[in-house]
Length: 118
Image (cartoon, rainbow, N blue to C red):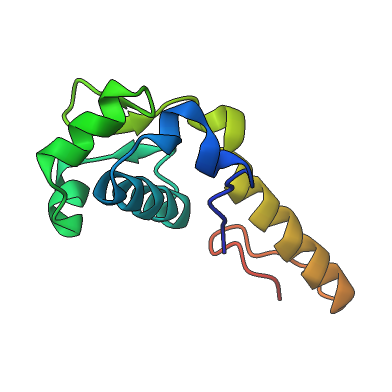
């Protein structure tokens, strides 16, 4: 499980305080999605269609600087890796947790092809 980390004072940050309810909801939903699927803050046009996002809400997030447009289409959360864990960091944390659990269970032989412990 990964987390979308949100500061407890985010609600009154100047970039957030003036958002419409729809844009705020899209920002939160997209953040949760990016964290769950380890997209490193990339919100693709396909993801926006999945959310049935309104272009005006996307523009709102871009205008206040919460999102940046990406050349491939869609958006990227501004400064994602400064505030959220990256795919690489989450993957490494999960790997270390699996190794720790394997050691706790007395398993030491890791299958190099599957990555599972015997």
